[in-house]
Length: 103
Image (cartoon, rainbow, N blue to C red; front, side, top):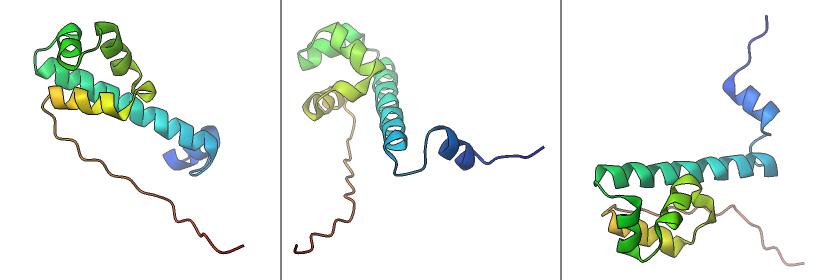
């Protein structure tokens, strides 16, 4: 029986690193983790979704959507949520090397 590494399985099923399918998968995974982090922190702070919503000026339904799918939210809203949760936010951005050679 042949065994496969996790990387091999991911490459085969999701796509190789750098392909559109893999990029989409990894983005959605990261957004799920952000939503889970918001929910976990909200619960640790003993806040309801309604209370958190009031702190940042949105409805409870928007907090629920954010916790379940953070991919469809503005950076401003995320920053307000984390400020209300008294969370320290560190933003790390990596830009791909782009060669702007003269044409």
